[in-house]
Length: 199
Image 1: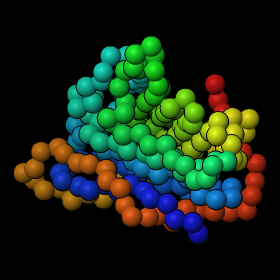
Image 2: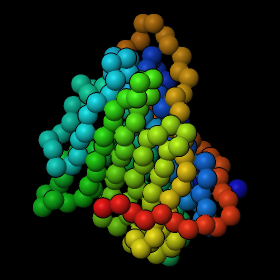
Image 3: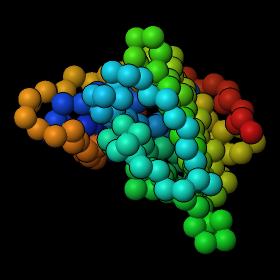
Image 4: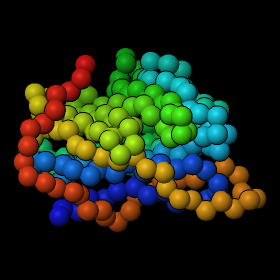
């Protein structure tokens, strides 16, 4: 199976961490979305409930209870393999003259306190979106640079969003960071049709 770089949580404190992992990708080459995020204990206990995008003022992520976030989409283009990455540092107001990146993040919690919602991120040439639905999560990748993930079809992958076991030192503050791993295996299956991009 092809290998791509990924994200894992390097725990430095007690928090609720969730890993997003591609489980099925019916396309030639490495097509995947990997990443995750973590919530403060207070937000996990009470339930996440917010929506934010690049049209709004800078978010106070600490107050909203989002302590870390990182996602990378992997996809082939006419020029070769490509990636699009978003971290908390990238999720700010739109730049001068409405310059990209453009993004939207919406999080809620189900009765079991597991997060649901979705995220969209684009640099104006490529984009990815992820729907957080536990073991039935979905990722969609689009690119204007050729390859199977063209805007006419996009690439739709199956994924999971699972809580990651994190040690809980009793005296540390609510800190944590998603860091790049060396490589991950990119699941592949037989070729299939891609899903359409939503609006």
